[in-house]
Image (cartoon, rainbow, N blue to C red; front, side):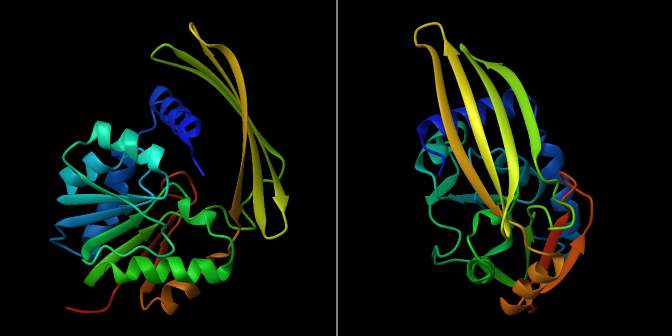
Length: 239
């Protein structure tokens, strides 16, 4: 998942297209701070190349990140040299401390492979959340909102690299399967073709909420925010 080439393409695509990490962080912070006024620490799980780290640091306070991909973390470390970034699997990592807010954004939760793994992941996020703290999760699409056979395409220029990306997503049982093709062109290397496949689970809203409750979190759902998929918030009971 997200090797060196994928990490570079990920950063190029979202940087060149102007993904508004700040606006997304503001939405999350607004809802989180209503539930946990005075929150001062954030753990961003599946942080990728770290686009949300600086905004969360400014909006909430101390911030750290976790990701399964070392190449993604390498980019994040270069961009955020003062931030603690940890290599770890969102299903079962152990940092030995808790945070006021734990986030998992950009539908990364969809990469779990089953409902059991969803429960493991939410339990892991809850373990790293302080009493009275909040877990914020951006889901992948629900079965009824997912659009089958979706095609997307774009071309971006980033530094000395041009990347063309074409993706096709189809229903695959209880998940979606996205096949992505890249054409990368550089002055020195010419043109390369790379392909990757992303499979994301299509859980219902009710199954997400069940998973939050199993993790000991009190769930609520904010519809339509972020990329239109909404945002789940789970409060860990306590002070």
